[in-house]
Length: 261
Length: 311
Ligand SMILES: Cc1ncc(C[n+]2csc(CCOP(=O)(O)OP(=O)(O)O)c2C)c(N)n1
Image (tube, rainbow over all chains, first blue to last red; front, side, top):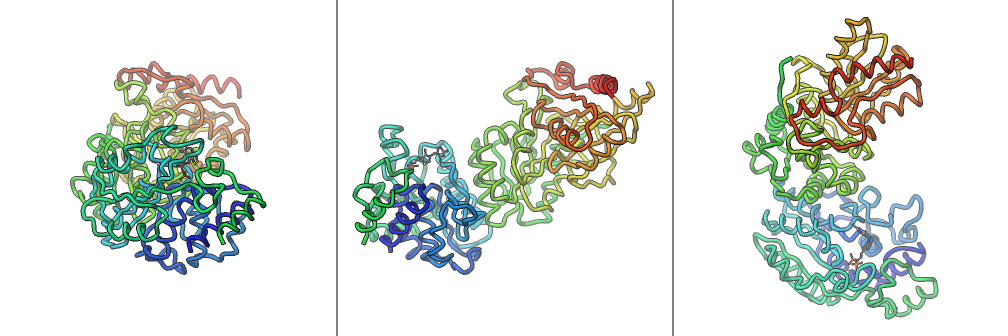
């Protein structure tokens, strides 16, 4: 399935002629495990009140979310070809107004964890047992608001909340460690009161175990630091900052799809 | 005129609403003793969250709660909940049109001694710029209670801007408020003063003085800046032929700009503006600052006279 989602990302962005393949590919395995092993949802009833909530904070990775939503039955796979087009339900950045299954409008980085804290608090107030998952990028951990949210989630003891950081080490214009170093990273979350789990973000088994382990943690939130490779799965995109926000050409897409067969 | 605190009225009304509606959740950012969400917090500690000094996070949390079916009231000083959170307001509340009510206390220069860092005078321009927001500046405590209740009833994002000092009470308890519908406080045929917030009482005062000089002024309380009561504006323009707009805000983007747009499009007449122009104020007592910045009844009066000369 992860390969299938990656193929969708390539085709969608190539067809659209723009978009963010790199950070979509790095998150493909995490998204696959979430949508096909972890999350409880009813794609025919996106507003089902007991659904687990998945919040894509790194809103530019919308293509990988759309690919998963389509494969999960929220809408047809053929609709993926409309990405970024006028009148499409699939907006350039994840947008809750347009797309069934999208919980939050994102695109301005650093806001998703705050939203997730609100959703987690609502679960508690409503005595609901759903869990809330927020996928963050490493780049948006440079935003102050992410750490505001981190403080508050721990303060409110939100053990129904898990954050996943797609720790691919690359942001828009270069390596995170060169632009604004985040290390020591897991220790920061620990200092903020979070339970942390470091994993290989492309190992489906490790990803699943991490989500299962997070469910057992009481009275504090869990962050899964998923060590990933930007552009994962396509040799010429891997660790290549150029493919952060640039779609593959038709030729590149063909090469990529061959690699993803 | 008797005076009453709009924020205290807000706090008490919010606590009443809390008794009536279990879905109400209140957020504050370490200012609840000042915004008066403390009344609600004391009575409903389980539904009150102090977000600490994290205004941006607070807006995001509000969005998450509202997206999960809660009716969320959010309070802080007007300056912090507008300027500091604008990106969060637009992406998390305005674009998804979530059911969050921002009650921004300590608006304008009447915050006083704290100085210009605390004077929210560009907040209304910011909130009015946001599609889908209803923006209300109540004239007094009675109108505040009604506006807060209406915000709780109507779906969608709201901003209600209140003041720090007590405000003259211009309405009796049986006042009927409807957001988006301006109130003619006083009939008149020579000119219309359109006011909001603390300037309503001053407009009434100015109209009294002008009446003694045989200038018959209509006074309209335009409590809702968005959506604007265009009918009342067009009527004022066509029936009185001159309009003065007054507000405790910079010249750009607030009530004056918004009314002028309607007048220019529908019924051009001479206009005057009594506001804070294009500059920040300083520390001082509220009344001293109003004097210094040209926001007294006297200033309104003079604006009417000079506008009438262009009629
Ligand atoms: C607040 C904000 N600033 C800047 C941007 C522009 N921008 C889009 S993606 C990005 C950085 C991408 O790196 P990262 O966040 O680590 O994402 P990933 O590598 O997971 O794709 C930037 C700066 C933005 N969307 N939001």
